Structure formats: C-alpha cells, structure tokens
Length: 296
Length: 296
Image (cartoon, rainbow over all chains, first blue to last red; front, side):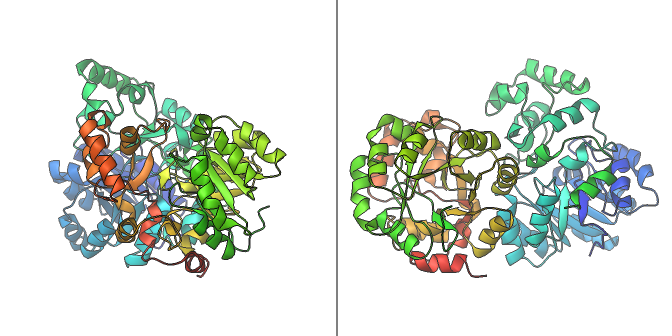
C-alpha cells in the first residue's frame, strides 16, 4: 500500500525526527516521517517542511495535542503528506479528514482491541507498538505477542514498532508477518536527526537494560499524556529520584529539569530510547542505517 | 545437549507443575520439570517424585528458598533429575554440587550480564526469560531482544521463555536461534497440572492485556522475593486495589488474601499468567498441548 523499496519508516519522534531526517529516509528507499511531539505547534511543523520539498514524506501527530490545537491537523493535511499518523486518542474524526484530502492514515495500537477500533474507523495501516518501544506508548505487551494477535485478527497491513534496531530484529518481524518496521532509536542517532551530540553519545553508550518506563518527566513538564501511557527513556538521576515517586516532584525539581533541558544536561533531562538501543553503536547517516538494517 | 524429541520443557511452576505434568511432558517428547516455588519444602518435593519414577524429569528450585532451606538442594539432587534449574540467586555453588552429582544445570537469566555470569559459573543451559513471562522474573526486556543479545554474546544453548503458547510463537523463537522453549501458561491449564478448575477457567478466558506485573501478593504473603523481581499475574480486585500501593496492605487485606487463597477465590488470590495466555483456549492433556505447539 505504501509501495516502499525498503520496508522501513522512521518513527515520527517529536523534537528528533525533523524534515531533514524524513527526507534522508525516503531517499534511502523508506518513508521518512516528520514527528510532531508533546510541544508541537503549527510553527514547528512549518519549520520542517522545506526539507521535504519534492520528496515523499509522512507526518506523525499526537491525538491529545491535536485536541488542544486543532490547527495542527489542518496544517499537516495542507502539507500533503503521503501518510498521516495520529496516535494516542480515541477520536478518529481525523481519519475522515485525511481520506477527504487523499492522504493515507496510520495509528499506533497497543492491543488487539485498539487495532480493531482503528480498523473499524478506517485507518489504513496499523503500527503495532510493543512495550519495547522508546518514547511514549501504552506498554500492554511485547511486540511479537502483539504482532501475532493483530495479524491473526485484524485485516490491515501492520508495521512493527518497538526495539527494532538491527537486521536480525527486522528479519524477525518480517518473518512474523509485518509489512514493515517503524523504527525510532536507530534513526534518533542519525546525523540528520534534530538530537544534539550529548544525547547521541548517551544513546550510543546505552544498553536495553539502561532504559526505563516512566511518567516522571511528563508529570514534571505537566504534559497531558494519559496515565496509562508512560515513556521509555534512558535512566538518569531524575528517574532514579522521581520515578514512582512523582508526587514528590516540587517546584525546585521542575526548575532543575527545565534548566537541564535547555542546557542539554542529560543527567537530568530525558532522552527517549527503545530496547533496541544496544544495537545502536555509532553516528551514521540515515542511508547507512538503512543499509545496516537490511543487510544480513 | 538435552537430546529432546521436541524442543519443549514445561516451566517449573511452583504449586502448578507437579510430577504428573512433568511425566506427561516427557512422555510427549519434551522434558518435564517439577516446580518447587516460594513455599516449597523437601516434603512437597517428595510428594511429587513418585509420578516421575521411570521417566526423565527435571526440577526447578528458587535460589532464595534454597538459601532458606538448603536441604531442598540435597533432596533435589538425590532425586537424580536429568536437569536441575535454580533461579533467582547470585550464588552459583549449586552448579558445582549438581555437576558433582552428574546433573545438567540451567538457570533463568534476564539480561546479557546475568547470562555471562551464569555461563562463567558453568551453568550448562541458559533460560532467556523475557518480560512477557508469567510468574516471577526480572522484567528487564522483551524475549526477542534478550534472545538476540544472549545468542550473540554467550556461548551456551539458550531456551526461550516468556509468552510462548502457540506454534507460531515457538517457531519465532526457534527461527531466532533458541535451542528450545520453556513454556509455562500453556501447561498450567493442562489436565495434569496441580491447578484447580476455577484458576484454569480464568486463564482460558484471559487475554495478554489482562496480565499485570505486580509485587502486591509477595508483599502481602511476606515472601523474600527481591524487589526487582515482580510476578506477572492475572489482574484481579486485589491488584486493582493494592498494586503500586503495597504500603497500604494491612492485616485485614492479608487475612482476606489468605482466606481467598485457601478457598480458590481468584477475585482476590493470584493466578500466574504470561502474555501467551490469550493463546490458551481450553483444557487439554500435555500431549495435546505439545501437538498444538509443534503443528503449523
């Protein structure tokens, strides 16, 4: 349906997957996605669009941000993406709007019930997102369990997401019946991502067991993520102190987090990372990452 | 190394995998394991041994129970099992004792560091236990992530554990390089298990998303499980009330749990279940389960 030379999309990581990364992924044969995250605005979207002029691209939005700022959806459709993904919301009105604009639709699903609802709402492509994944998601079950259930019960092409950062892992999900993979962490360290070097270095040094599911940062930032949707990040001194003790986050902690985020101090500020982070061992351009992922 | 007709061992589920289940699994071509859990004693082990007279079997012990009651290890070795598994402990002295008795050894591992330590200690077979698994385990990462890392870095045969309850899931782990599978939930509902009918019925009705990782029951029972080792169980009114609020478990709650456990009231009492529980749809004998798992 997406008609790709290589069955890979980069996950639309907010603040990380900008237009430059999206263009590079598409040029290497996949489909590049621009990610609009917790603090996305029409302005931040417009800033990324010049990079994808003349190449196919997709856009990924967050349901609760669209509810807060409906102009984001209009701006995304006006950009005429090949694929629009809206995740983390129960309202599927955006699917109709996308189809009216001739745009294919995708959404992340965490269990087979949600996959069925999305399919019933007309979503074209399902992103089966296992608990391994970096960033936000409902950690209902692991990728392979989820993938098997959705493929058995829902009649839609399924992209596998969560922990895929090696050719071996990609092979495993394709063998299990996925139509392709939705890959975050491996592209987050790419030269073309919006991430800074300090965050890249931490991702490169980290292993799967260095990641943790937490709501601490969302609570501290005051983001409207649902309580059943934590994010997987690299453990750091902030999670050591506040994870599962979010009620103790006070004004001092919030100030320290804000300062750390502004100064790229990742002893305190968050870095999203999936369980595939151990397979990420150096900075490369997106084309080299795709070559590594597709060479066994 | 284990020389099995079918690459399947039942997980040594305490209070569930007795001698009758172990004998049935071995007779069907796998290796049956007797499970000695949190409340195991030499007496409860001796009660199960008559069922495996004349058939190959293994025994699974818990490290911290052996530390509390070292006679368990002696009794297990005296029974001359084909395989002894001791999990959840840092002390590997039991490996030497087992080898002196001519017994092969296995242990559950949750990350590649632990796999390396076990291999260095001479453990013969590693059980790569993903966070999907039912019952107790350190939920460090999902099975396929773990399996890939251990196979790449540790030179030992690896059994895959966690969420495997279908032929498709078994195929996936064998394709990923596992030497076999260590399967719990699918055998828990078998006619030959020690589980009662009320628990079987709940397992048959449940889906992966009905499971939850919790320490609530261990805190209530006062078991010596390490804090990094929760158990995956079916959600019920006890976990709804006390999971992540374990400090609120008082004498009344403990009494109610004890009463419920004695009367098989699973609205309150725990039932271990892995993410494969959705693939478990009826009561069968172990031979039929193995046939289902090996027929694609």
